[in-house]
Length: 123
Length: 137
Image (cartoon, rainbow over all chains, first blue to last red; front, side):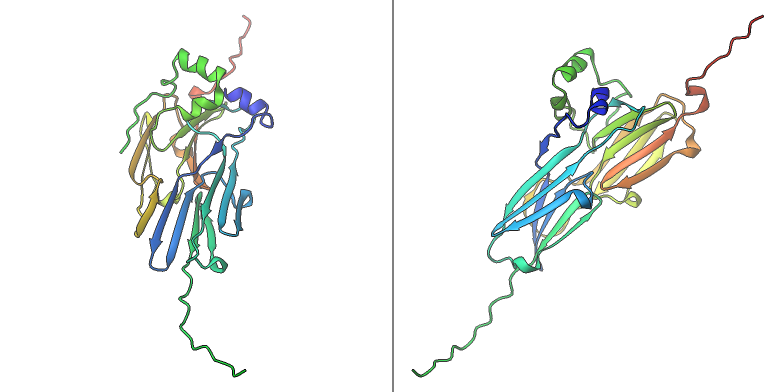
């Protein structure tokens, strides 16, 4: 199997993987952690469209010339996952960071709208 | 905790190999659930042990090389907070990779990049393929 992978990497389509994800609520908002081992910053795409947050990344392990794999338990993949963002999240302040193959998304809550008086204009 | 005592090439039976050739992509997903998943590669000079461990810095990992095995140990910490969804594995893990070939132990290196651990184990001279010149008498 290793030989075929090494000799024609373009022909083999990467399997689509749904990455393992944690969604946690903390005091300062929501955190989403996505396990994406092998994905570098350049191969990670995060899209926010209206209420939908899409995360995709590609991990490709090219086998160096002359190397054979004797035992295989994982391979590359195309990670894809989408989330629906609640209206209480401040979409302008969503932050993302990628470290050691884990994507961390911080979704802060929207500041509470301050109650305010509405001026009445005499017509 | 996961202890995998499988020998180096031991888990592939002839049936597994037949299955892999028929359906290569399935072979990966159907493999054992031991954590973390390990790939073992080899070329003329080195053995390569690769491991998918996202979220771990190399300082948090405990790599031990004994006479005949490489032990990868660590713990994936739990984040505090109210969980709405938890799919990522947490807790202590350990994986033992048996190494039958001779290794020059001083030259072993390990690197971690994007959650992928790579341990390079250079083969000892006696276990490398060597040409023997035959002298005519």
